[in-house]
Length: 494
Image (tube, rainbow, N blue to C red):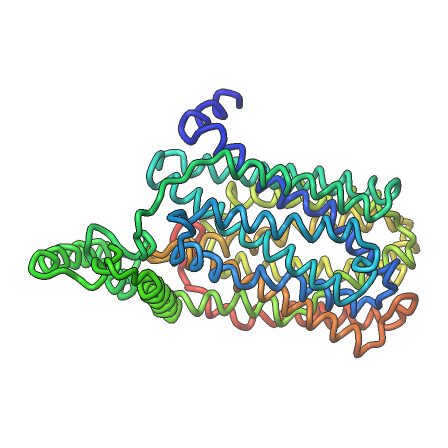
């Protein structure tokens, strides 16, 4: 383990490796502070489950527009640098809301102001996530391509470790500390992240307006990559090589418009260059995403979220108010959830990679439905009649649900990586993740609406059993649309 870390430090530098691990650890450790936010909405603001879930869904919306942050940092360098300045800005946006909420009781206890500050905080976290992913991609591409998998592995390990620590300490902190102290304690991590941004050096782009992914050796590779993105055979490499040869010949005859964009003119037309760069990036992204081979699978993953109402906040209210489960126990349940997630990932990589994705996704939906039935057992109190305690039922459900849901998320990551055409991998992958996040947000809105229609509120859970029953039935809707997933796609090929 230590030898592996030394190799990564030699390849990428200690400061860069530290920054990557810190950002991903902070992303996982967010469970420490967001558990406190849930209790703030429930206990101090006295919000109903539907109102609380509505505010949380609004606050997490910035995660649904991640491609905008990627295009922004690609097309609009700040003082010649595309990454570190945006990472610094994102860290400030992550830090200031927690400091303000920790110091101001008025803003902390006012619904609209709290929602705005939480949204700003998520804006900073989402932007930092996009920028650090871009920095990882650039470091791998330009320095040590052989360490690509290792760098991703250490980032996921850091996030999982942060999630476990955040879940364990979050429950303990809620029992022993005031919520304002928890907000201030968490702000230490983004403050450390802000300091660490100054440790990483970044070279100037020297006036280059277009992002690197859209220009290569003075030739125009945008159209070539778009036209071939739904082909995954040897014809793809042959046709792309012919395009490159033709493009190189054309570049010898006359300078291309893209080359003109790369060098700033003497009249200071940087604004025009940035506009052309933004226009090119948006157009290329739209053309790529419009291809059926990309659009259809992403439509399924979006439908898999929006067609199933998310009642997680309602269940949180039920567990804390009706079952009287304390914060420390719920933190322990989340730790089991993180462990289940890691076991699910290992199981998928070991046994399911060669299985067709349609079968994996179908069995996953069935598994999710069965686990949702477990919530019905909990609400109906049937577990007590069977001699099974509430805590055992919650722990069992938490561990299994995160593990099974990972069987759906892993194919999403695989398809996203395989469907990205060359040249715009980073931005298009961010778009894929945004679709997944947007689907989750819309599903939360649907769940909040269902809870409101059924009059499920704090202290009134009479219709919760019916709500969960509707959720179980809706879980089978995405199975009907599995024809959108490529028929022969597996974890090894799409």
